[in-house]
Image (cartoon, rainbow over all chains, first blue to last red; front, side, top):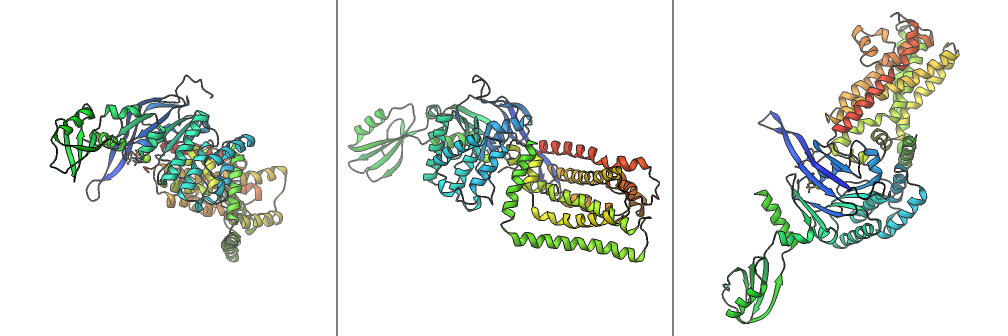
Length: 324
Length: 266
Ligand SMILES: Nc1ncnc2c1ncn2[C@@H]1O[C@H](COP(=O)(O)OP(=O)(O)OP(=O)(O)O)[C@@H](O)[C@H]1O
Ligand SMILES: [Mg+2]
C-alpha cells in the first residue's frame, strides 16, 4: 500500500529475546536466571500472505509478536515490519498494523461496543466517512448488529472476540497479527471467524500472522506454516507439505468376514483388533495397495478404509521430537 | 495538539461512564471537600496560638496554601492517575497503549481519568479566590504573571514528580508507597513557609525535590512576606520555572521506562 510491493511485509533477522527472571535458590536466596524466550529467529513474510505461527505453550510465539508490534524491545537481532523498526517507529507502525491478543482486550469494558469503535476512530484519526464504510462492512462480516449497543462487559466471549477483531481492522491495517483469536470459541463461532478472515484477506490483501493451538485454523486459513519451539524455528514450509515431510503413518482399517487373530503383514503392524475389524498401521513409503494385497492373501475382506494421519498427530510428533 | 484531541475524546468517554453513577460521584466530591476542610481548620487553629509562621501572617500562609493546593488539585485531576502504571505493568495491560498510535503517557492518563478527583480542586480554588481578593497583594502586571507562573510551575512540578516516581514501576513493580511519600508528603511540605522547617528539610525542598522553589520562594515576592532566609528577589521570578527541567527529566525517565517494559507471559 504505502511501501513498494516488492518489499516484504515482515522481515526478522536473528531476532532474540532474553528475559531475566528472579528465581528461588534455596530458602532465602534468589538468583537471576536468563531465559531465552526467542532465539535467533530469521523469517520473511511476503505481502498478502497468511502464515500460521505455531508451537507448544511457552514456545515464544507471543514474545515474537510483541517484538514485531513494538511492545517489547528485542534483546538482539533486527525486525522490520512494513519497512519500519517496531519500537523505534512505534506510532507510525501502529497505524499500519492491527493486533489482537485473544487473551487480552482492546476494548473499553464499560462502554457500548459502538463507543469503543468510535474512540478508536479518534485515536487512529480515521476520517469519519472511511470509518463508517469500514465499520458497516465489518459489522456485516462479523454479524455485530445485535450487540453493538451492549457494554463490552456484557458480551459473550464469542461476541467480544468478533468485536476485538473488528477493533483491530477498523483502520484498514496492511498487516494483522492475531494471537489466538479463536481461543475458547465454539465450533460455529470458530468457523464464522475463519470465514470472515478469509474474506478480509481476499478483499483487502492483508498480510496475516496467526497464532493458534487449533490446527484446523491453520489447515483452513494458512498456506504456510511456521513452527517454533523453545524459541527456535523448527519448521517453515507449505502446510500441505507437512504430511509429506514428516510422513506420519497411515492406517488401513479392514472388516474381515470372520474374526481372527491379528494379521501378520510385512511392513505393517496390527495396532488394534475389534471383532472382525483390524487396524494395520504402515509407513508412508509403503503403498496401501501392497498392504491390502497381503491381507487379502490371508483372509476374506468385506470392507476397508484408509485413514490419513491427522495434522494434530503430525504436529504432536514434531513437538515431541523437538523436546527430546 | 492531535494528541490532546485524542485525550479529550478518551476523557469525555470516561466522564460519561462515571456519570452513570451520579450519587457516588457527588458523595465522593463532598467527602473530599470536607476532608480538605480539616486542613483549613488546622491552619486557623494554629494562628489562634501564634501571630506569624516563619514571619508570615495568616493571610499569607493561606495564600501559599491555596496556590499550592490548587496546583496539586490540577495535577491530581489530570496526572495523579499515572500511579496506575504499576498495575498496568504488573498485569501486562500496558501493551495496549504501546499498540495505539499515540503517546503512551497521555493515553494512560486519559484512560484513568476520574472526574471524582475534581474534589481536591474545589476547596483550594475557593480559598484562592477569597485569599487573593482579601490579602494585601499589590496586583501589578508582574505580580499577576507571577501568580499564574506559580500555579503553572507548581502544577508542572507536582506532575513531573508523579510521572517520575510512577515510571520507576517499569523497573521495580511495587513502588507505590515510595511514590506517595514524594507526592502527598511533598504537598504537605509545600503548603507552609519552608523557613519554619529544619535545615535539612529546607535543603531538600529547594534542591532534590524542589517544591519550595515553585511555592515558597515566589510567594515571598507575591505576598510581600517575610524573608528570614534572605533569598534574592530575582529568585522569586525565576523559581517558578524550576518545574521545566524536572518535567523534561520525567519525560526522559518515562521514555526509558517504556523501553524497559517487559509485558507478561500470558
Ligand atoms: N514478561 C515476561 N517475563 C518473563 N518471562 C516471560 C515473559 N513473557 C514471556 N516469558 C517467558 O518466555 C517464554 C515464551 O513465552 P510466550 O508467551 O512467548 O509463549 P507462547 O509461545 O506465546 O506460549 P502460549 O502458547 O502458552 O501462549 C515462556 O517461557 C515465558 O515464561
Ligand atoms: Mg502466547
